[in-house]
Image 1 (cartoon, rainbow, N blue to C red):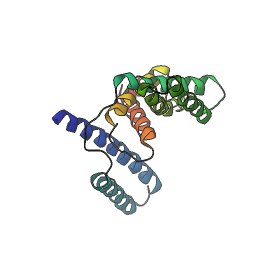
Image 2 (image 1 turned 135 degrees about the vertical axis):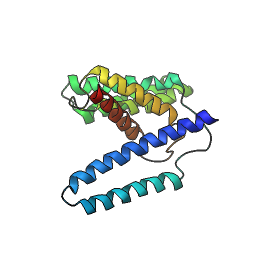
Image 3 (image 1 turned 90 degrees about the vertical axis):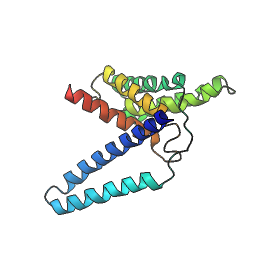
Image 4 (image 1 turned 135 degrees about the horizontal axis):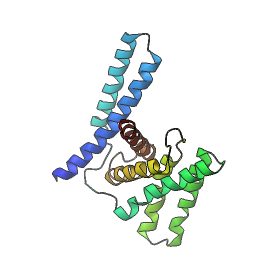
Length: 186
């Protein structure tokens, strides 16, 4: 039971940390000359996020994780979209759209299969990583690493943030930020 709570705490803390840092950087850039407004904005944004996570019903109380056989499709979706994005002139939006559209037809292979019904979500989550520009994701290895981390987040977040829009984009964004930081430190 403790490992489930630790996994949930890790996932929520990671998303909260990345959101706060990202918003702080935006606020700092906007109000660089006025420190008082910057400090007040930072405090308000941080308190809003903390109270939002604490008091909103963002997840179920049971501990359920996605199967590893589904999670492996997150990096596959990331690589597919990245290759479409970088090796063609389609652009990132069409690349993610094509990846998501093709993934949406996978359940028609076997309509009774629960496994095939879960694949489009995993592939689409990975596709958000693949739509990154070459300046952000400079190599296929970078995309694979971010896809693996996003797959881990996808597995842990099955019952977290239920009904909140942007879950897959947030998972992809957090994994890209963390892999970028690791890449920057190395």
